[in-house]
Amino acid sequence: MAGWIHSATGPMTTHFWGPVANWGLGLSGAYDAVTYGPEVINERMSATQVVYSALFMRFAWQVQPRNYILFACHGFNVSAQANQVRRWGEHVMDIDKEQGPAKIKDLSMIGGGALAGIGAILLARRPIQNAMLSSSAPGFVQKVAAYDAGPFYIHFWAPNFKWALSINNFLDWERPVEKISLSMNSALTLTGLLFCRWSFVITPVNYSLFFVNMALWTTSGYHLARKVKHEYL
Image (cartoon, rainbow, N blue to C red; front, side):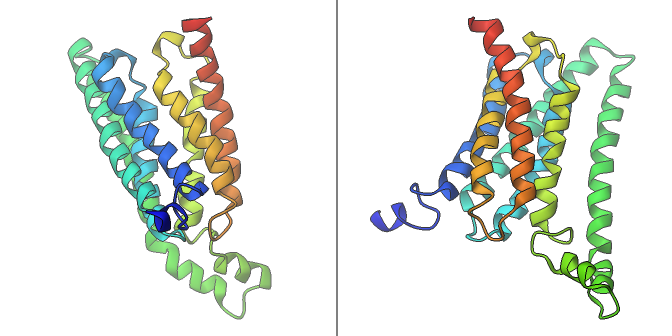
């Protein structure tokens, strides 16, 4: 037990508490599913989290030290948020049989486009990277291609896809406060704060992860403050 407590990913380190905070994302999805009706679901945010957490499962496996807690929490979040999207879809079909299919199709096209884009990048990654690493390429280009947290590695794409969460927060800037999830925005704010620190203690150090989490905790904190003010102040 003492060895685990003081290990590289034990509870004395950010490698433990950052991923633990991420459990709040999946738990908030599960909590909202059993506590609230489907009419308050933010389908765009839940769908975004499905893709985001799938990418971070790969990130957790590749980062050093390898983080099984982070891997597990994002696997759980994929399931929890996919369930929320399912509940939203069934609700839309029940209350709006004319426009419901179109709304579901629009969300599916956005998600499918994101997955198709990621797939295309994966297919083209090696040929483009090899061309940039060739001796005929400028030195700066070679450094970008070889950088461990650069655009040819999951260390770049998982953190930068997290910008989609903050973009969703901006799109929801004037979302009715009754439809704001207290649990989800609490989890997003906390994970953003802790991952600002975590980005500097992993290998490789990830500056893009720092900036994306700064944006996440500030935008989620804004919605959290709106909800708390409405409900408790």
